[in-house]
Length: 137
Image 1 (tube, one colour):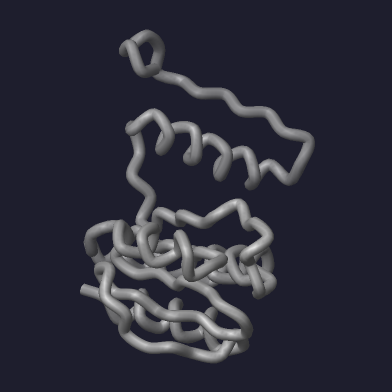
Image 2 (image 1 turned 60 degrees about the vertical axis):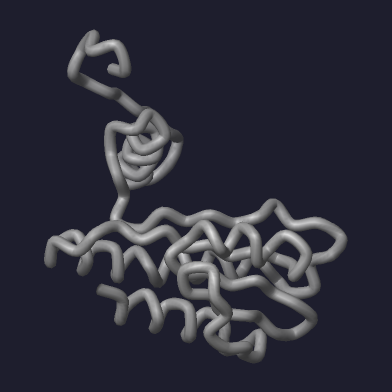
């Protein structure tokens, strides 16, 4: 596909067939042939992570899928969203995204275009991040 050879991509998974569509989109996005309405970036976690980042990132991604569909239908530009697990690397990574969060012990700093917007409690991270993305132009 990258070299212009062929026009079909077949993905087979031992899973719900809907997952094949998501996998194909991820492959196309990695090749630069598809731009998802929401691009998620998250860290792999390390010893500095003091929140349940896996759950937070998963829930943010799940909730932003609806926001992404809404953005795509309305013709709005794609968003890059970062969910980072610590205050050491998180702010730098979040700076590269339209919106993001750098988590600390029981809290998270929400960023907009690299600038801190507000600090929220861990239990409010998901709602705040999704809300700020939903309101974006």
